[in-house]
Length: 365
Image 1 (tube, rainbow, N blue to C red):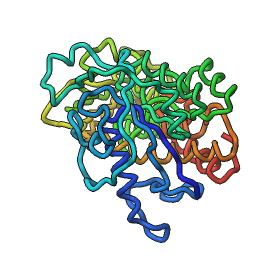
Image 2 (cartoon, rainbow, N blue to C red; image 1 turned 135 degrees about the horizontal axis):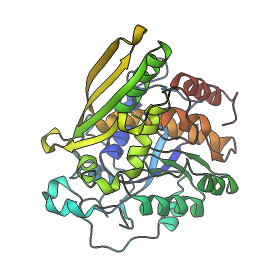
Image 3 (cartoon, rainbow, N blue to C red; image 1 turned 30 degrees about the horizontal axis):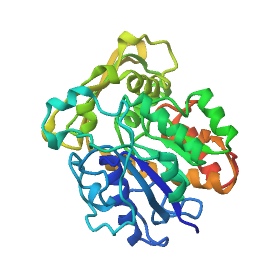
Image 4 (spheres, rainbow, N blue to C red; image 1 turned 30 degrees about the vertical axis):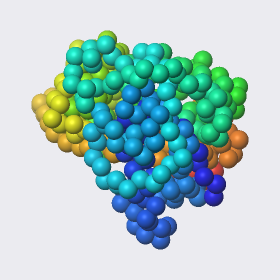
């Protein structure tokens, strides 16, 4: 099979986990049982077929540095499970800062925050074209509304497919979907789900309650962590789309009416020493037979960035299948299964079946 040439926007913890994973899974072959992936072989493509040909960031410790160095540079703090990366022929390009850096971050230690480089942004469209990238992955910080739209437009201008892993509404917005349809470029989004993360667990438990006849009366999901994502989200003004994305992902599974005052889902606090470990506190209160009360509490602790990397690897390969099949526009099945805020919400078991049908060629998108 051909290589899948990707460009990465934001060489942070998520990019580090993804790149390490691409190299880590090269040691497996198709006859082995492979841990940690939903699919090892997806439509003929394995993780090792993914090739990074361009990368963009704004931090002075990453810009103009070799990719293999940038993925381990501060403020990255995710677990290093594959340190021996190859010498990629890729240096990190300077992107436009726009709204990618929250103002309050300057009050925190340098190794915990972004430090914008004193450099002029490169021509993103030109870099994409010269690199031969087929797919762009956006790992921009939460609240980067302007920056996400800039890169989405750059993907269109360069003729590159787009996977939006952040909670800015591109692949769930009809106007943007039409733009990608008109260029016959696939798009997947918005806001990546983790493999076993707070949102997917909350969705599953909510759906279980619905299937078993429980009336949910109150629910919350509180998340804490110590990476730059949680530091960034201390600015609550950057959370509007994030809260919508996470809340709709859960409430879409509730079949009865429940008002916003009885649902609280979102980040809670930044705890520096947790680094990339994310801890979720989840509670569901409801009524069972005879309106008798029931409540459920769960604590989930997981390394945040590797938890999404396997999902992104599947999204990349589904996007490549669409390119191979000359399918443009929104990939409905991949967005529904891999993302928190797809254009159309489906129960996860339905979305999974849709993805499998897409992979097998039984479903166009």
